[in-house]
Image (tube, rainbow over all chains, first blue to last red; front, side, top):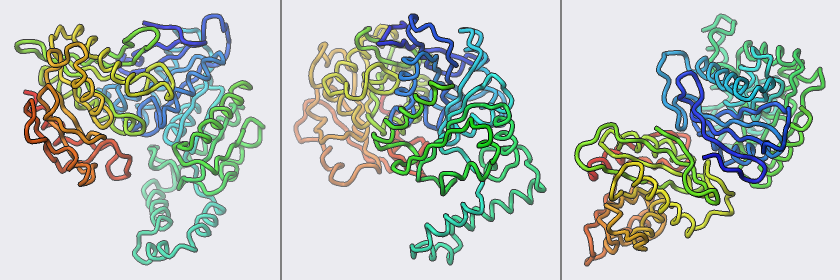
Length: 285
Length: 212
């Protein structure tokens, strides 16, 4: 059944090489006749394709109403998709599955251009995949991993100094900053300063991530970077520009800050604003 | 596992049918009634696991999203209790057809437990004849399952406060067998750094045992 509902229609699809990726494809009404890029929305961690507060359903329907074909799918082992049968490392498997979905949409609907959307780990998957696929012309990265900068540490300490419990944590050896620095040093020792085999956990200190941002910026991929106020990964809105200076050089980065929101965009006003921002940005891609 | 849309064009619901892995005897089937709101998101993984385990026990299952929730059509403002009850009825009819089963078991978590109990009590479609049994997992509302017209198992986990647990105690003179069991298992419907994604295996095992 593929019912028509107010400017878009939705269908269930099983994508991927084993037809194992449970997906919802939201298509514009046939009358829309648009050449807009297709949009692929990625899982946030282990949360299935609906997203926190049904955010991705609203986003998909809104973007389909504006003429985009949108797919929401679950990575293998997440949501309703069956676990992967092979023994590929998780990150490599996710990137392969994004490629499978992109190929499927390109083949089925003759769509040559794509935008990837992801929150948190979804944002990381998006930037890592985009590096190697020139069909990706846009990225929406919400609270992606960023490496800590000097200013990051300054803000981090400043925010925590007034709270007595943070001093207790330092004394007990449970300080988040100490853990981060220990992790950083450990990573450098393990990889000898190189990037090693990237994993989502090692991205924060990985030169691989910097290469991805650099490549994507040089290709002038349109990028919408969205940051909320509650994330251990960044402490100020411009951190992405300090961490990856090339992202701001081509004029293709739009930076949005949501100080009123948590990581999951729980406040309805924040979600409404996010949808407006994405719709406005997508219009220009 | 077969994801599909069910219902009508006016009230289109997303569902996933997991056929029984092996059948012995008459077809057995269970509709899984999801929680609502954020609890639905966090419990999704456990409900999927439950469906898989029940399939291995010979049950066809149908998980579905209420209208206005999950992947179903509609917006959150379209969801109300009467509509959720109607959606459960749609799911029952669909699963009876898919599984060729005369009767189905309803398994509800949180708001899903409340709605499942309401459907059983309402005698919609001659509920006592169509609904074989009820499993009510951490219901939201106080409930005396002994008054329901079908046999039931109420499962209470660590997620409920003592006064909520007490409100689920069965009355003295019920119509049908109604067991209430406390299982010290994590609750899958709360987001918590230490438990998100954890499957409450003891609960799933108990449901399997009780339904066998």
